[in-house]
Length: 143
Image (tube, rainbow, N blue to C red):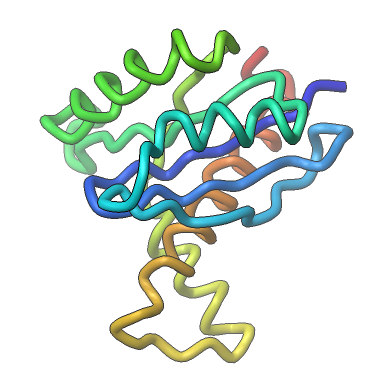
């Protein structure tokens, strides 16, 4: 079974999630600070170390029209830069409301928001978007 890596891209932080070895369950993995180090190479290293087969990147779409936005273009540019380093299939998943769902899930577990907790939300959002993709894949909605 393939193993997946989920990415919640942001200009300041990148949330990363990994699937289990069966490609059925997503888990938060880490948050990368874009100001520290080469995040593209770090993602490539994670893909190698964790035997990732496919990368799923959250794509921000306009909530009113479902169309792509300036943020969507930035995500696609990031994916274009990542592709030659990872040499793996990259697909996109609508990331609508993943940060909200992630924050609600964290709060349900007793988490309290603070100024330093945005990294936790980004990692959890990557988990939510990857799990959404895995669920759609299990239903045959995506390859």
